[in-house]
Image (cartoon, rainbow, N blue to C red; front, side, top):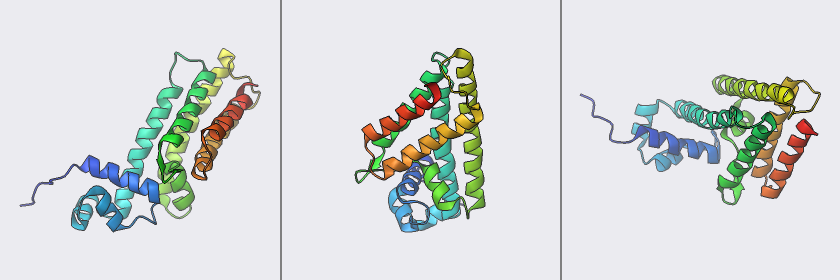
Length: 198
């Protein structure tokens, strides 16, 4: 008879997610995962099957947590569309200044994974593509609504604007990893909003 698990799988998954976020997939060793989770190798492999399986589950957890929080901001009907985009950009700035290791931002696990793995890991790429499509659809809907409520004045196509905002957010995350401070990130957010409303 198999022994019951004597650890919190969700806590272990969170610890693994943080490790992959800090180090990236390739640079994270099994030993790093053992140290982060407090589990032995056999427990990791019995529970998560492989490093890649654990990574996929950690990435799915990150995507669900972060994208859900971003969509909640974009769906807040109490604010105009432009105010929702401003709140999203402020959330990104706050997240980038909050999640730091060694004085540098950890960036975004999805952006980091896109750079590191999407060209050679079809399963990770598919997860990232689904997440991007979900975020772009939400951004486009808000920008279309902004056209109707008058808070978004750019004449550009809402789909193109959604891709622009998404790229600006990715750029903010990478800039933060490169050492950009809060003021620099807020400036990027302001210019992004100006492009939509100015």
